[in-house]
Length: 91
Image (cartoon, rainbow, N blue to C red; front, side):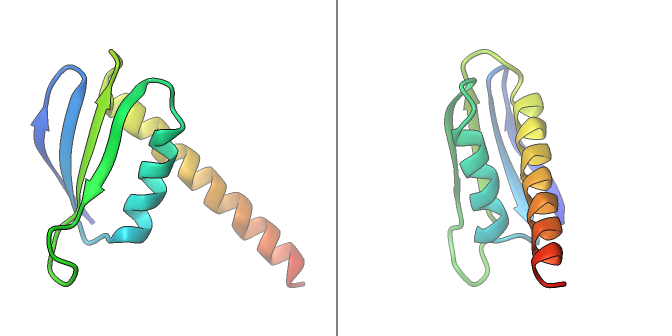
């Protein structure tokens, strides 16, 4: 995975996430959508076969980097919780 920040302002950030697709981007976008600090959260993949996802975050006033970091930590925790529950269910 490679991340390139394309635009960075006080309350807006646009970044490319090379090496990822809809699964990861949608999980992050969904988590961002639950955050009250976020005004806009979305992503776009220009071409389904060769496109690089572009994630857009716009916050009310908080640093979009911090908001994104918080969202990714929550996605990781949910994934870890799912893994534990699945391992327990399949023993």
